[in-house]
Structures are given as C-alpha cells and as structure tokens.
Amino acid sequence: MTEEPTRHLTDPRAMRALAHPTRLRLLGELRVRGPRTVGMLSDAIDEAVGSVSYHLGKLAEHGFVEEAPEHARDRREHWWRATHARTSWEPVEMLADPERRTASDLLRRAVLDRYAERLGHYLDVEATLDPQWVRGTASSDSWLHLTSDELIELRADLEALAARWQARSDPARPGAETVTLMYHAFRDPR
Image 1 (cartoon, rainbow, N blue to C red):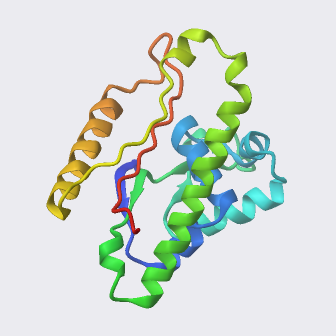
Image 2 (cartoon, rainbow, N blue to C red; image 1 turned 60 degrees about the vertical axis):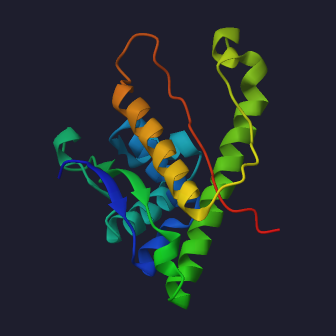
C-alpha cells in the first residue's frame, strides 16, 4: 500500500488506540524516518522490543501502520511503515456522540502531551544546536477577536500554510533537517 496523505478518524476505537504515548511516538517515527524494523524503532524511542511489537500490532489493527516486506533481507526481518502522512478528525463531528467525544478528547490530550514533550526536549538541547537553527525557532501566541466564521477561515489559512511547506519539504535536500510545526487556534473558554 502506498502512503495516503491524510487519514480522517471517526471511529472512537481507533482514536483510543492511537491515544497512547508509545503509539504516538512510533507512528511519528515511521512518518518522519520512513520504514523501520522493530529493533530500529526500539532504539529510536528507547522502548523494549516486545513493547514496540505489541504497540505496532495495535496500530496495525486500526490501520495506522502496515508491514513493509519489500525492505526485509530475509523472512525473519519485519519492517513497518505508516499508512498515511497525517491523521485528522473533526471535534465538531464528535459533539453529539458521548463515546466519540470522549475518545476525541482522550486523543487530543495525548497529542497535546506529546507536543509538550517534544518542545521540552527541544528546549533541553537548544543550547547545543547551531545558532543558525535557533534563529529560526518560533514560539508565540496571539489573542484575536474573531467570529466563528473567521476562526474557520483562520484554520483554513493555517492548514494551507502548513500544506505549502509540507509540499516543499524534502528530507534528501542538502542541509534539510526535521522541523516540527505545531499550532492551535480555539475560542478562549473564559
């Protein structure tokens, strides 16, 4: 199977399956680094081989990853790949169904925890990076006064901007390194 650009989630079981820190890390590794063996993934995320195998099985059960046998040198070697580049879901689609709303909330909180972990790790190593890379680092927030339609328009603009840079992304380009882009836009509940 070739990697699809985006997987849109509606199944609460798939959301709950993905809402595990180890599974989020595994899926992220496969997306960023490409197909990997269980051993490679175990080293990359510092988890036991048995744990990685178990979590890959759960991800495969819900269609997030699949085996990549064309990479294996022999029948004992098992390679895995992500089946899609991104995962999306619409919180508004979950509002009327308590099970889906709970699963969506669980997944969103797990993703938020992963974002915080990744940003924290970056801050831990920032002083060791080439200043040219640190110069491009950005963290900010803004308080806007928008209508709900304008918030939808802002979301579309952010998604288009991310898609434009994703299309430009090429891991084989000289000097290119992995860069994380995170953004959130939501109505302040105060």
